[in-house]
Image 1 (spheres, one colour):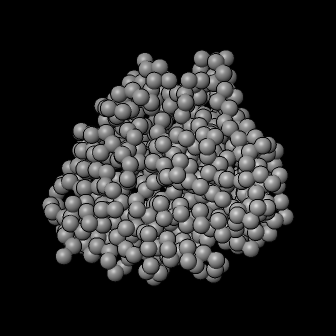
Image 2 (cartoon, helix red, strand yellow):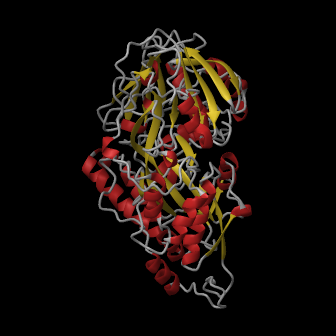
Image 3 (cartoon, one colour):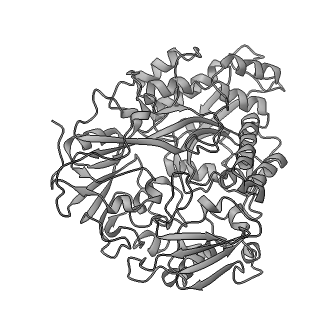
Length: 606
């Protein structure tokens, strides 16, 4: 999966809900799974389930639009956005939520998640599928007035492939480009497989044909005139990324208070025509107060925390849009470290979680079904594999995954020698030594701590002693910094991935993937990932079979246990018109350009 951005495990339950969950945690039939972000607005005990098949994907508004106007957008988060406002360098979803308005993907996607001809660039393949030509729209310009060029697109590859690049996007997809590895090693000054044909066209040659190019080709240029004199190691912290970022999307930044708010104005030079709105004001809003902000009309539009969704108390002045996400939540197990010099994941045979029976048991202990129904009202469902259902051609609908089964967890632990030898209620390791595992969980709204405690109780119920790292939840940026650096104090970690449109999992789970936070590697994993992007995988049926095998294999090895598949919600004020979420934010900048308003002032929930 081509990693576009990452999210953390979303907030959790109220204190009342955690008591409800804990009280029932022994019952396998207690509930169903899912997940989200807020939760303090309701009791958490309303178990009415959302009919996900009836979720709208476009707003309904028959009123006459006004000319221009400003829309108020909430970045719903308990943490500031970091301010790495460039797709080449960012890692956290809050930064994506800012730059989505001015720095979108060049490409648009169709219903099969393949690149179509509606975006700012199109692609065409050579007869042998070993080369792809990218053609950039002649009208596409940077917001500083310069044209977006083929040189800019090629330059983004040169930066990602540079030996001093410290971001996460140099992966197996990049190393398949002819000449990329020599360039990365400093043996060549250019990437021989990337040929600029003219101002707007560039061809990329691959060592082997890769079906992922149809959906997961790297999607953003980097303005060479702006960045070429900045050392690569300094780019992520430079002014064009942090203070004065530019893009080519429907809006551009007028002013910004980093971490708190951004004032956007429309980009009159947007290649598909100037947006209908005059501008957009973004501000960070805590999940605990987003419902009130929507009710009061202070906020027009937000990604809505599904824990707060309650038909009886939802704001009446907003419409809710929703769809399956290309994402999933997970619990992962630290099995080694990332060798930065070799750019390889290295497993540690002595890691606490090296025994896969222990990993499986930790997964079988989690009652995600109950969490989904009681917390997310059916907007999160138990995850059965590492390929989410939104990949309709590749998700294995027959996969069982690691579903809640505490009896099976106990049996696995018994058979593996994890037994309670001193009668304290907790199991020792097979050598009879005390076993204490440390779980890193992210902070969020008031529900985050409750969900973490619920998981700790699930593990305690099968005799495993698990404690929170540092005895508390970790802030989003701190969490990923410590997980990424393989903090020795972390044994288990809970997070979530947004996958991008490419089903290829190697960017998250490959031997050389820095995002492979568990650090799991094996010859079988290498083989299946390699086959999934082979020439034979241009046959969709062959590729589906390979990825079914991979899903089953990863479920058996359990370096990562997926917990919840997710539906996303967006809350949109009734004064908003002409907004559609079908293709997703990252791949449909025109959805923002087409938004109109039907009044100057937001409707207020009476």
